[in-house]
Every structure is written in C-alpha cells, then in structure tokens.
Image (cartoon, rainbow, N blue to C red):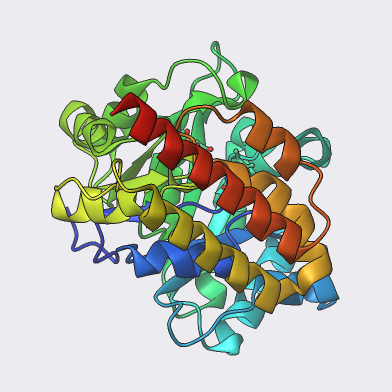
Length: 324
Ligand SMILES: Cc1cc2nc3c(=O)[nH]c(=O)nc-3n(C[C@H](O)[C@H](O)[C@H](O)COP(=O)(O)O)c2cc1C
C-alpha cells in the first residue's frame, strides 16, 4: 500500500448538520486527529452563500481538516475544490459519492453517481486535476443489493488519482440501518492499493478493532459513534478505555464545554435549538433519561439548559447513593 495521507487511525466523518466546528473541537480535545466538514453542496459553495461559509469556518486548532463536496457537474466540482484549496486551511478534498438523501439523489448527486461510473471517472479526474492537495472520495457498497459495485468504483477512483477511499458498507437502499457488509470493504481493500477507510456502525473500540480485523482496512471512520462520545477517539487511537462510565461529572463538564462552544459559534438562539438534541447524546449510557429528554426538548435558553443538566446529574448521583 502507498503511504497513507492520514496520520490517524480514526477519522471523524462528514456529518450534515453535525460535524461543525464545535463538534470537531470537542472531538479533537479527546484525541481526534483528522476530521471532515459536513458535505458542501457545490452551487452554494460557488456563490459563497452564508451557509457554506459557516460550514467551512475553522481555526488553528481544527487541523488537519478535510472539506467534502457534493455535486454532479465535473467542472463545477473542480471549481469548488479549487476555491476550497485557495482558502488555505484544508489538507484534503473529499468527493461525496454516498449520500442517500432524496433531495441529493433526485439531482443525480451523492450515491446516485454510483449508477454512473463513467461520470464518476470524469468528475474525479477533473477534481484531482484542479487542486494540488490530495483528493479522496466516500462511497457506499452500491446503490441496491443487486447492484453492489464498490470495487468497480474504487478502481475508477484509484485510476483517476484519488488518494484514499472511504467505504460505508451499506447500500443506498439501506439508508443508515441494517447490517454493514464488511466483505465489501474487504474486497475493496483487495482490489486497490490506495488506503481504504472502513465505515459503518463503529460505536466502540471493539467495533473499530473488528472492522480492521475483518476487512484489513487502513483506517476507520466514525460518524454516529462520535456523537456524545468524544472519548472514543482516544480509545481507538490509544487502544485503552477512556470513557468516564463511572464519572457523570466528567461527562457533564464535556457536554457543558460543547454547549459553550455552540453558543460562541452560533449565538444562543441557534445553539439552544441544537442543544435540545445534543444535550441528550451525552448521557446515552446513563439511566433514567425519559424526564431529562422531555425537559431538554423544550429548553429555551442557556440557563434552562444548565438547570436541566444539573437536575439530571443530581438525580443520578442521588440514585447512586440510594443504590450504593
Ligand atoms: C445525520 C447524518 C448526516 C450525514 N452527513 C453526511 C455527509 O455530509 N457526508 C457524508 O459523506 N456522509 C454523511 N453521513 C454518513 C456518515 O458519514 C456515515 O457514512 C454513516 O453514518 C455510517 O457511519 P456510522 O454507522 O458510524 O454512523 C451522514 C450520516 C448521518 C447519520
């Protein structure tokens, strides 16, 4: 295998609406050594829409960082990649060939491109030619169970100059549920010599070890497994337990840190809307959450958020004293 462009065992996935600067910061504070932005739709990127500019916001701590683009027109994708390269803070451009969302595939973008290998070849060649930094791509195993073509797409990608490929071992038809097919990821690893990144259903360091053992992949990519569990980066990189299972105060402090980053980045009004969801991620392995989740889904201010968290943590500590 050629030397990998990634110095990390585990990468934070592009996550639409989620892998923003605050999530990337909390992840990096717990051992994440490479992260991607969420996917950037190509047209808004070319017109430098305010939303696109939020998606590419970064800072000196948030590095190394890859930017992901989604679109189907080779010339526009190449232009977008060049704009991102010129910004000067991305070390990789990733091309999205896996998004299953209706609004994306209905335009022939994301995973719809898996049905058009010729276009994939034209598109990837054009993007690779447009920039000096490495280009990678992210695919699914195929469009449907009867059209699994990850190896064909991976060979095309390698021939086009792509420097690493992420394989999410599900078809477009599976969406985000059902089994992840490790055998497809293994077959991609066997048919190309660029680094392969295994993705899908990695929630623990044991899952990561299993993905590497069964597929031979060079790196793993975490998506949902990173939400509310930034410790997982350290666990996988260092192969040690670091999730503070018996220390709810440490979990609370990390959630409060994430909340503060969200408030600083988006302002309180938008941060509160995000915290209704994010506030629940962090306590996923702690008991008695029904009431907390209900309160969290109605919070209207940072102060209401803080009291909901304090009340929940106190209830767990009292529960421990009674139980203990
Ligand atoms: C809410 C959500 C948003 C996502 N956004 C993106 C995206 O912008 N680009 C992308 O390539 N994949 C995206 N994905 C797919 C993930 O990166 C990943 O491939 C998938 O969730 C499987 O990994 P997991 O089982 O570890 O979650 C998204 C997934 C979810 C659940």
